Structures are given as C-alpha cells and as structure tokens.
Length: 64
Image 1 (cartoon, rainbow, N blue to C red):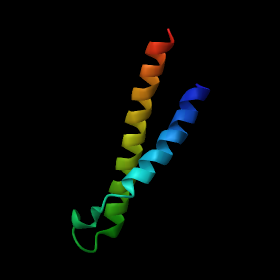
Image 2: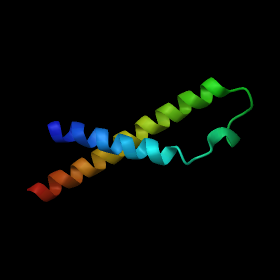
Image 3: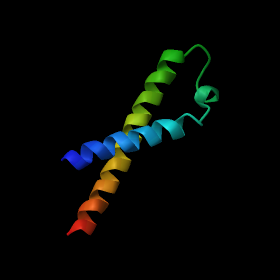
Image 4: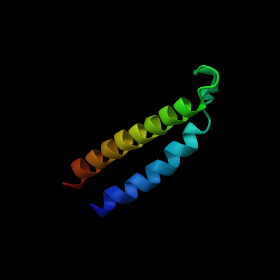
C-alpha cells in the first residue's frame, strides 16, 4: 500500500501541473468563480484517482 500512496503523490503533481495549462475560464459562465474552482478540484481529483489506479493495476500485473 505504500507504493500506491507514493504513486498518488507523483501522479498528483503531474496532473496538477498539466491541468494548469488548460484555460477553463472560457467554459464557465461569468461570475461563477466558486463553481469553476469546485469543478476544477473534482476533475483533478478524479484524474489523479483514475491514472493512479491504472498505473497500480499495471504494476500488479507485471510484478507477478
């Protein structure tokens, strides 16, 4: 389980770094800053979860 936590940290850094390149201001309505931030947060958490579990499953498949 320690490896999965480390993977969450590493993937989290890369996902946040890559999400920084997206201009999401044009997607949302004007004066909806809080809603845009909440959406951005949940989207980031979701991507971190999916990518980490994908890499972890690959790690388990190739370690056997």
